[in-house]
Length: 116
Image (cartoon, rainbow, N blue to C red; front, side, top):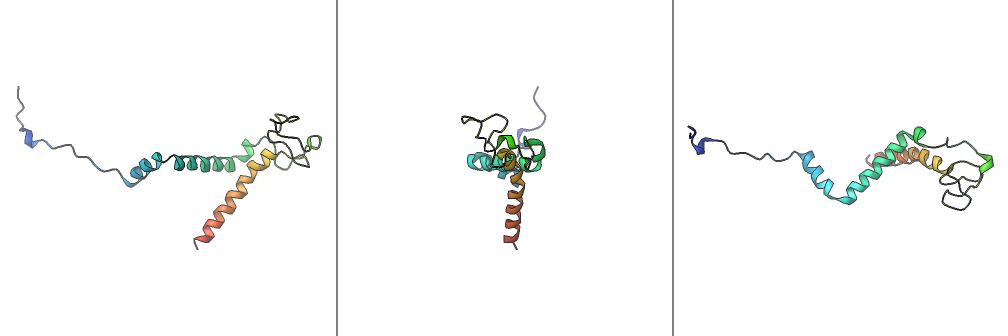
């Protein structure tokens, strides 16, 4: 049958506003440039932390039989050295991956010093 509670006595559903972090993330996620920038920074941080695992070769190892090898997509390039080698036979891709550590360190120190 009918409910014994009058309709005016039931509490109305109240909407609680989102917290500051949830509000920030909702606006941040709508900006494609911000999301792309975050993805790029996260990729660089991942490469810097796991450079020893991700890099195909040690950064300072010399392959003297493969000096000045062109990139893999060029004529004469091999899949062994995707970005080629330098004049002393070091893999350029491995050196770039390991170089992210130093680049992020210098950037972090610069930002830290500018805050002082």
